[in-house]
Image (tube, rainbow, N blue to C red; front, side):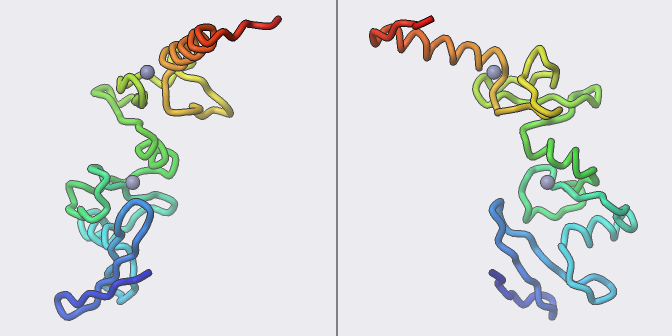
Length: 145
Ligand SMILES: [Zn+2]
Ligand SMILES: [Zn+2]
């Protein structure tokens, strides 16, 4: 779905995505592209092949240059999976249950094919399984070996 809004004598297009609106604009060559890409390139030159632009505050309509970050597709996936970089430039992932940032190691998370599975940390997962077990026992369930 496109909405056409006249602005500065040129047509802007807005594309609705799952995560908000992405704004389109025409670049110097008259090609219609994402506005955030055009703005980033105005400050930094051409986006290197295969790289992507991330909105730091996750607001896809905030296309101020301070809000735009050049990232690899792998890092981009991380930014959108509750990861952030700590003061040492190392990745940490936030647990959606205890809300703590934890190093992406096997001590803290369950892995599958190199990626963390689920959104909660190991500690919370074990806690949750224990709670489920206690609830089942309380309901009169017995463990069958
Ligand atoms: Zn992003
Ligand atoms: Zn946790």
